Every structure is written in C-alpha cells, then in structure tokens.
Figure 1 (cartoon, rainbow, N blue to C red):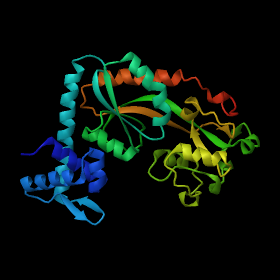
Figure 2 (figure 1 turned 180 degrees about the vertical axis):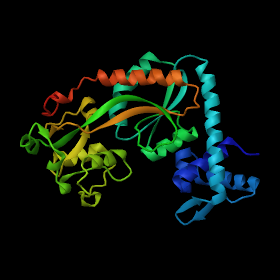
Figure 3 (figure 1 turned 60 degrees about the vertical axis):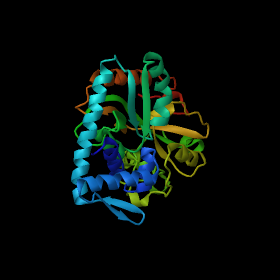
Figure 4 (figure 1 turned 90 degrees about the vertical axis):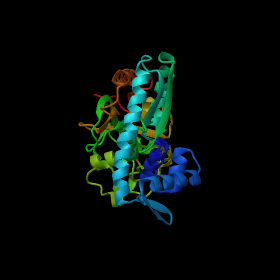
Amino acid sequence: MISLRQLRYLLALAEHRHFGRAAEACRVTQPALSTQIRELETFLGVTLVERRPGGAEVTEAGAEIVGRATRIIAAVRDLEDHAHRAQGLLVGPLTIGIIPSIAPYLLPICLPELGRRFPRLQPRLRETQTAPLLAELASGLVDVAVLALPDERPELEAVELFADRFLLAAAAGEAAGLPARVEPSAIAADRLLLLEEGHCLRDQALAYCRRIPAANLATLGATSLTTVLQMVAAGHGVTLLPELVVRAGLDDPRIGLRRFRAPEPLRLVSLAWRPTSPRHKDFAALAQLITACWQGAARDPATAAGAPAAG
C-alpha cells in the first residue's frame, strides 16, 4: 500500500537530488528515507530513482510518478486546510514559505503582530530560495509564500504586498561623494557585490544594471545580505539594497545610502498560494496584516544612513 509519507519522501528526493539532503529536509535518517523509497519502488514495480555516487536522479518513469504525487499531496493539504478553515480565521497550522532576502527583515516586523491578532495560529516557517519554494508551494509542502514572483511561474493566485525599492549602499565616505540620485551607469562592474547565484535578488539587480555582465562581477559567493553589507561597510564594493532592510532597522554609520534616478528599481513583494486552497480568507487576512506592518515600520529610508529623501 502506498503511503503519503513515501510520496513526501519521493518529492523531497526529486527536489534535492540527494538522499542525505532529502532526509534532512524530511527530518528523518537517510536509511529510513532510502528504505521507504525502495518499498515504494517494489510496490509500484518500477525504478523511480537512479542512484549515483554523490547524488540521485529521478528516472523517466519516476518523473511521471513525481507529477502525480505532487497533485496528491497538494490535494491532501487542501483537504486539511478545509478542516482548519471551519475553525475560524487563521487558526491551526500554516506553513509559510519565505525567501532569504525577505525573511530576516520582514518577520521581526510581522510575527509579533501576527501572534497578537491571531493567537490560535500555529505558523511554521520555511526559508528557501525562489525556485524550490515555488515547487514546494505547488506540491502542498508549503501553504502560502512571501516572495518576489518571477515573470515565469506556475499557476498561482497572488496579491501584491508592497513595492520594495532598491537603494545603492556604499561605504559612508564613498556615498558622501555621490549625488543625491545616482544612475546605474555609476556602478563599476568590479565594485558590485551581490548574493551568489540562485538568489532572485541577484537577478533583479543585474536586470537593472543591464550593462554589467554577470561574468564581470566581483566574486563573493555570499548567501546572506548581512555578509554583503559587511563587505560594503569595509569599503570592498557597493550593492543594491532593498528598502525593506532599512525599514527593519539598518543602523550602521559605516554605510551610506543613495536613491536611484527615476524610474527607481524595485521588486514587488507578493503573497502567493495554490488556486485550489480553500484558505483564501486566511491569506487575504495575512496579506492585509503584512502590508500594514510594512507601512507602519518605524525606520524611514529617507532618514537612515544618510539616504536623501524621496521626491
């Protein structure tokens, strides 16, 4: 008999392409996950995964099973959500996915208010990059996601939360020598520091600075904006910084900020969910709360770290 646990393990393996990482994501031991996959293969009579040294790849037959398993797990999650909806607004477990360039700055603003207004909610947070987050959202492993939606994406319902403008962040002395409004052409390729590949924030910055080939960027390999900002503060380069970071409380006198000339670069932060989910009212309430928290954030970029006022 096929179990939902086996299907969830298969989806994790298809995503991570590695037994160890899939087991870690499922919070089980690698032997336990491997055993369940083999039992699933035995029951179905097909090889789902090609085992390789250092990794695993889903077979052609396995890809079809993965697609069907995705729909099954999503349907089960929607069934659970229907039951939770009957208990009231934002009640019970809710798995919220969020990308790394948003999570550390938005969550401290929103989580206290979320707990105060909806004390019966049991939020579970999943922080990961955009591509795996969209896959987990489609499969039902995540209920709702906060992210900057790419142009090409699966069929999702979404609502815009806020427009997060980018500022140029440089060492304070370097920023002092720049005009109040800067052009992207002022950024030297070998001075631009960005997150490593795979982060949508990197792609958004490069889309604005179109003249800079990715191959010409300064090599950094940072996985967090905190690391990038430490390099900027030490004078090793500049970066495009989301306004959200400043509103969350950026307070480093070593860093100066400048706005870009209009049209200012920005990312549209959205809340997205599966169209089949019955928790639309929950998501609408969550979106309203996040937007209100963003609007009420104490820090104004126009007064932080020497940034000039907008206008």
